[in-house]
Image (cartoon, rainbow, N blue to C red):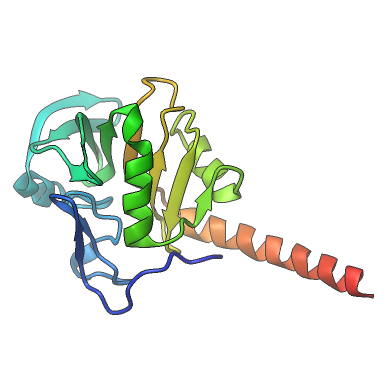
Length: 199
């Protein structure tokens, strides 16, 4: 599976105002490399409260809150946010910031400059799997994945429910293993095809 390029040995870098990325493969205290504005998938409820949560409302098996500050990145400022906490575990399940539809290109450039080439984009199986996991109709979508269950994705204005651009970090149990199996199977098929064609 292709890995996103990043600065070796870096512990944290900042994008815009308050967007932090931890480049360690296994950050301390259960953190995640996919940290947006200080929030990350799997973050304990109390830690999220310290970062700042407002406007919380109970949804089906979840509590949805808003970040206390907008996110600024690539010259764009978020217009809304949703920090989703799992009702049973109390941990953050997803971090989502919404931007104007016109911000997609600037956000994509900023993310690529910081994180390197996306792991997947439209047409790749990781992108399809991410969209099919309940993220609606992302067209286009850029996905960054570093082998575990966490994913960071940029959804273009094709997300039909609002026509906005979204920056999302989420965690799905078992995703890393499932994607690794798919990658292994695809690599074997490609090797078989290459072997056949070389004869």
